[in-house]
Length: 491
Image (cartoon, rainbow, N blue to C red; front, side, top):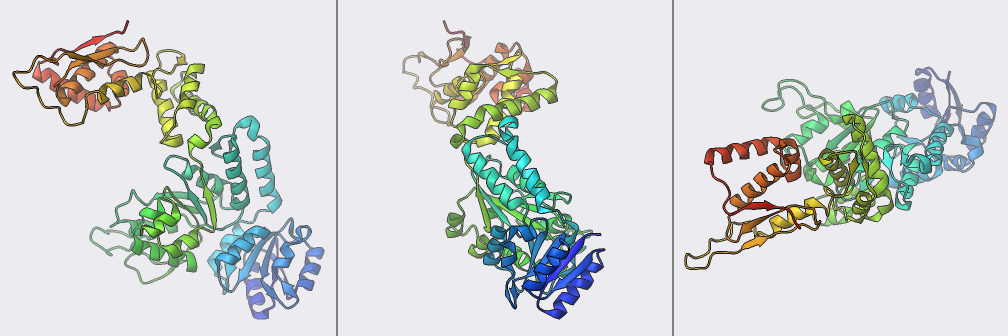
């Protein structure tokens, strides 16, 4: 049976904890001061140590300062109140969790169910770090650059604790992947990981989605609904784009984080929750506070352990690794192996990637679809033929259709639009063509270029196959060709 040691100078509190823990199939010892605690540890190393902060002969934190005493024990602090200072101090000294007195039975059961020796967690992290240079990834994250190694170090420190994590970074940098890695390296890994995009849920429904609702609590509530806090019980709840959450709901979230209790919409009964919160935003946190998007008190409660993800442009050395990782995954899924040419890799590295890792993944997928053989060159990468097409559109001027030239004006001369690559075909359009005419010309020319292969045409134009079919049906009904338009191959 696992063994627990309760260190608390309050005899009634210690006796209550002893009964609760014994009911969970543990052997339990009790110490009321630091001296007795050291003696009990020397007699039998506990699997879990529940440690009060204030003891007659010292501070409970002092035990954590001696790694030889607690190296093989999971330490949980028992405190009269939860505070940011307590959480940070516990994290720095290696505590895995903390409980607020009077101890909640459900939270205690959750802590006891997640016991894992610190040495086991540390060994897992060390294995990931040791194989990083060879494998190129740390958990779900890919990259060997110095900025990413700093991220891995932070994840290693915080994953084994229960403190809240606040991830910041531009859109597409991989905030959810960081949250998933934190969860998978934590003691909660066997319980659910649920991700919620606060900006993707209707403001009228977000409270119900997060906290749940009772049957009949509002129009359309035909049955009781469990919210994310209930479904993620014992695990991790990832709140993405937290600054998009309505301010009135941020107040309720803050209350849950402070008390561990919440109520479903339409209920008067408080429910207990045991969930670790990982939040994220693509805004600068203090600017979000200043602009009224995030409550300051909620920021302080979430920002116990901040992780700032670097944009892809600040980790350029990781681009080839990431691109080949995405390409390998697509090749395995599609059953056809393809690889990048050196020129393609150079084009990827030379691009600014405003959409970060998400944009890189999408570009690789599109390049795979457009490739005609085993090799993927730079044609369909940023700066290749795609850029030439964008230049053709840009040459038409503003998005509004240009005004037709006066009847007395001389006939417009064709405007030639050339791509950057000498082998890239181009189209010519007369000045004064409407946007609709230009769209039709480009679409039909692209279709002819790909020998009427509609899937490749749609991918090249960046539209859905359905849109392409609808446009072609319209053009067939009109029975007219675009005026004075042709497709030409450059000399």
